[in-house]
Length: 262
Ligand SMILES: NC(=O)c1ccc[n+]([C@@H]2O[C@H](COP(=O)([O-])OP(=O)(O)OC[C@H]3O[C@@H](n4cnc5c(N)ncnc54)[C@H](OP(=O)(O)O)[C@@H]3O)[C@@H](O)[C@H]2O)c1
Image (cartoon, rainbow, N blue to C red; front, top):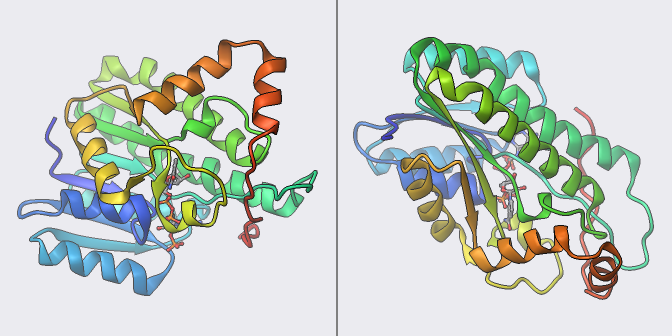
């Protein structure tokens, strides 16, 4: 399916920005969201320079009312063919730290899960009424199996995976496709904040190419890199005690996010 009108959250940085630029071309309408005015404007002008028509929504994805309004306005202006729920943060544990800050946990759930619902819900009815459209979720390999370094992050991504699977089964009959993107390590500011070995890490631009290709084919799952995805899937079925022991032996340090509930 070739999308000509695309809404992307978290387009001011990282994967979201790379996706905006991967799609930016003449005849394309992009509705781009982020909170940081300067970085969002920077993505928008780079996309315009490539020939796309761009509108920006400088909004916090946690703000349901503002998101509903902005998405409805964008859809009225240029019916959205593809929505990519990408905005997200990370938070986790440093070596020796036992529990996450409850405020950081609630903030990540509000952004990575409720923010995704705020992005997707307003488009379900209009897309189904049109009998076409595509809804894409950015999950994570960290959503396949809980990791001892990032309990809340893994929880939000596992929830996004389950939500997207449920939606896919429900919306297919209405002509609306649902795709779950499951990236491994992609070099972005979010990923740079994590101290760990990052096998098979790829660039933002490389990730955007894989994602665009998968979405154009209407793939239900776009997981990359394949070896890491298969390893994570294997970790789900191997004996729990063995996997826990291996994971506990890997040195990972993830800073606590400074986010608070909006
Ligand atoms: N990088 C990886 O290795 C990796 C792997 C798997 C999955 N992912 C997922 O990919 C997505 C993008 O991450 P990234 O690596 O590209 O990180 P990034 O460079 O830090 O970008 C995150 C984007 O999300 C936006 N954002 C965060 N909180 C927001 C909020 N409350 N409201 C609106 N926008 C918000 C940020 O915008 P502002 O800064 O303007 O607020 C920014 O544009 C996330 O869902 C992440 O979990 C990343």
